[in-house]
Length: 321
Image 1: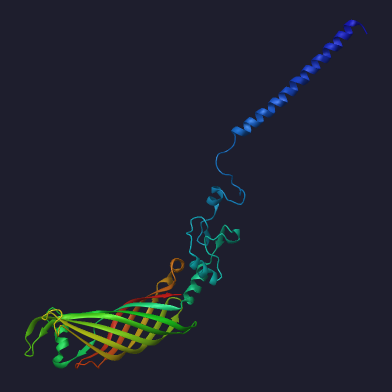
Image 2: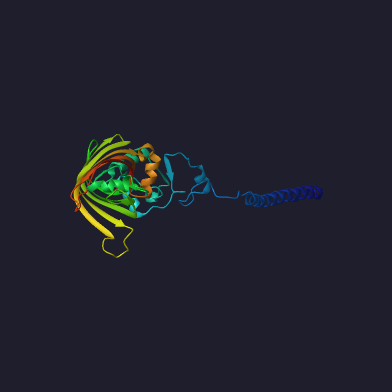
């Protein structure tokens, strides 16, 4: 081979090596550019996937908002007492982290139905209008607090607690104890019938004990009746005698009896959401609006006085665990 041919071959070899080196440099440079591009293209915000067992905001926002689902997010923490009540009924408490569950599905209709049946007692508050009859010498009580000048024949506020003895789908039984306070007032009268300037205030304090039965009508209504012995305290207060002087107050007591009938309208029975929320925040399993009738008789006071008759009232019953 001549010297010229050898020079051509050597030159070609150097050119090939230069091209390869250029390609290698481009590959290395390209990796840097890819890495830089990835660094600058990262999207801000949380990943839409679960990372180390914790969900991102995107997952939380993507959860359904139907009424049948209750999520940990936004659910109030509940006390251990409430948690125990839910467990007693076989349900997992909303907001709990037991078994790593992110949410639970609740059938509110079934829960509310179970709660309504679970009450062990009921607290009654009732206002009874004073339409009772008063018998006394010369009809003095009626003429004072009933038809007298500036007379007030008010009513009685009664409080009663019922403790269930047994409960079934068709009949409930309970024992009860209760008490109340009533108020009446009016100007006194003299024997000749003229009106006095003295104001008489008549306070009544009945104390009841009894047994009762209830008949549930679906989940919306109940018919209830309670009756038993009672004691009435009667306190008279007159304005023409100074405090501490004899005759300012006169207290009398008489045994008697009472009977009470209630038509109960279950306010929580018309709304499962209301029943669920009420039970979740308290021990109350049912809230009733009551239309009531009370009959009573007391005829053994120290004076010749008898209080008897029937009157109507309106009240509420709070059933609870």
